[in-house]
Length: 273
Image (cartoon, rainbow, N blue to C red):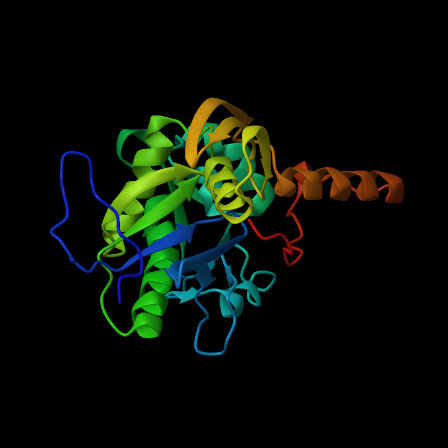
């Protein structure tokens, strides 16, 4: 069964060649994997039927990484070993990431070329390695659901991700055993899905307000062709920042020290990206 046919630039697939591909939303707060069945997108569930995978990984000294809801439940008890919102650290240097790490209660080290690394009980890890554990879980879910190995994945990224952040996403996918067919801007992916479902035409603005970023894309949809006219955004403005601002306000009203003066609480995230 051909789930999705994708031809790489300069290549033509053989007639009737079957390829299995998936789309992955590697979100700041939650992640998803989907494929196309019968001409419609279908989100793939895990063994318990859950389609949403919290983008959280817990590391311990003697056990394999724990990914998802189980890891999220350990965040308050083991804050330095339970990594959340790692997408915000992708492609960033140690000095640039210190502020976010202090608010998140992570212990940081500096790796090659000054890139950020997390110091956990399970070892020293880069954001790429943590993201790879999330992608590996989604990869395994796809293989289990589809009953066969997949040929590649389309992965969404914030529209304003720079080249270092995009390359870090590709590296994470490679570590997870995934062949990246292409990276697609998140607002563009939403617009494509909207246009395919509604057959709408015209100029459309798509906002994406996620856990770590705020993006907008302006696209023209005409006769099934999607042309990206402009993109913009802020990779340091998202739901995490709103959570922090609200927590700061509550603490100020209560006369307590600010988050920057101590550990940050870890409310369970409810956003979808």
